[in-house]
Structures are given as structure tokens and as C-alpha cells.
Length: 383
Image (cartoon, rainbow, N blue to C red; front, side):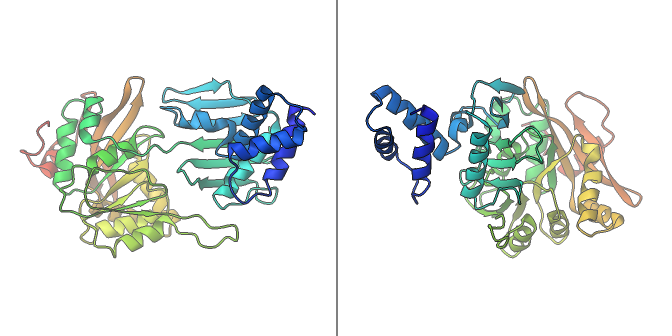
């Protein structure tokens, strides 16, 4: 019997078991199915193949657990890529065939309570361990099953840890300390993988211990070093398309939980309207993260999200002008992630704009006086 056929038969029997397979159980089935004709080395190899395919992320599991890995991407059976923080690199990991990739995608989706088949050819869901799964099946994905796994490392670095890594060039560390101390509402912006969540977690650790933090997130990434934290997490719909809890739902519930600081892990949808409304009704010091290439583009991003949620353009800008004080922008560089700009939000007629109040490159800062006014002369000194 070939190794592949043996694994197929073992897999078919284990699929009927309600619990995750143990190595001992797999080894017993391998010996039984092989009729005792395999030596110890062959049994071990067959057990390893069966366990890899039927538990965790299969052959991708070692990649997901490797230090520094942020993304694992599968474009086909022999095309697996990883990002360790320095860009994509090809991995030596291979799948036996396209069917093996598809089986893994379907199993991972099922583990999160989601359906993935020809009728529902894509899925975007958080796995039980916090990893973010996106999968697309053919014919939507022309070249075969595509898998994208985002490793959500829990942001546990303190402000001091980040300072030691060079995240705060020049006077930016002191400015951010003052931003938190003054209870100003702000957004942390940047591109994917720029360190937004990690920085926000570090800043929340500076909040006085007598204040109550209520965190609203899609996945539990924020881990601020703070004694009073309440965490709320979204939930996708089940296989019957019911039971969904959105980020907007969480923001609304958080407002009834007496938050001193309302925090939205990532603002990316209709929840922007509730967050802006909350920050305009006495909830000082609220904050969150937002994808944006430059601070100057933040008003346009908020406008797009707000209009999609039902607000008109002028209402979005009016709410943003009254709700937000500052934007902290991060950039990912070859030498690491660092604060590139601290911008201030101000009105410009009926709209709002973000002007640079401080820049790491020493460039023009038309909002410097306004930033100093917001933070106060004594609070703006470098830490």
C-alpha cells in the first residue's frame, strides 16, 4: 500500500471520530490499516502526515508558530510564502496536491464554525487560536485554493519596551505621553504591519490605573499593562447565518459600561459613526487604529466609512472635528517600526484636515503651535 493511500484510509476513519486524534490513536490505526507490514520509520512518517493534516494548521503549523512570522500565504500546493517582518519569502513547505490544500481550508473554516464549499467559495474568519483565516476556492481563485493566515501576535510590549526599540524618535515619546495624560481622543494610523495595535497597547499602559478601559476588537490583540480592562470581541455568524456580533454592536454596548476610555481596536466600518458620536458626548480619551497611508488621508478614510454607514459628508466631518484631536502615524522601515508623524485635526471650512504638528524627518509642521496648545507647554517635553 502506498503512503498516500494509507493516509487516506486513516484520515477517512479518523474523520468519524468526535475528538481530535492523539498520536497514539493515529499510530494504532496506521498499524491496523497497514496490516503490520510497515516498519517503525514508516509508521512514524505516516503518523506525522496524518496528524499534520487532521490537527492544527497541518503542514503550516510550524510556520505559524515560528518567532516573528506575521503572515503565511498559500497560492498552491507547492507555493507557500511567509512574512517574518521583512517582506515575503518562499517557504520549503509543500502540500501533496491541490486536494490537500482544499481539505485544510475547509477544516480550518469548520473549526471556526463557518462553511466553505462550492456554494460559499470564500471565508474570512478568526480561528480559535486567534489566527485570521481568509480562504478562496476555485473557480473564484483561478489557480487553485488560496489560503491567507494572519498571525495575530498579542500586543504585550510596554511603552518602555517600544522606546527601547527606537519606536519614538526625537520628541515623539514625550508628545505621546502628554497625549494620553491630557485625555485627548486620537487615532493611530499606518499601513498593514506597521505596528498600530502594538503602539496603541503600549499607550494604553500609560493610562492612570484608576481609569476603566473598555476594548472593542475583532480579535483579542490588545494587551495593555493596566489593572482595569474590559474586553469585548466580535463574533461571526454561524453556519446558519445567525448570531453575528459586529464591532458596531460592541461600541454601543461599551457606552453602557461606564468606560473612562473607549477603545476600538481597528476602525474599518459602520462603527465609526458610533465611535465619533461617543467621543462627542463626554467620553474623553477614546482612541483606536485606522488604516491610512498618510495622516492627511485620514479625513477621506473617515468620510468613506461614515458615508457608507449612512451619514452625509458634512456630518462625518463635523463629528470628526469635534471628536478627534490628534493622529499618530507609524511607518514600517527596514530598521523597524517607528512614529513618523503626530498630526492635529482642525476644521477647514465645512471639512476637517490633519496638519503635521511634529515630524520625524524635521519637515514643515504647520500644526506645531496647535499641538503645543493641545498638549500644554510642560507636558510636551520629551520623556
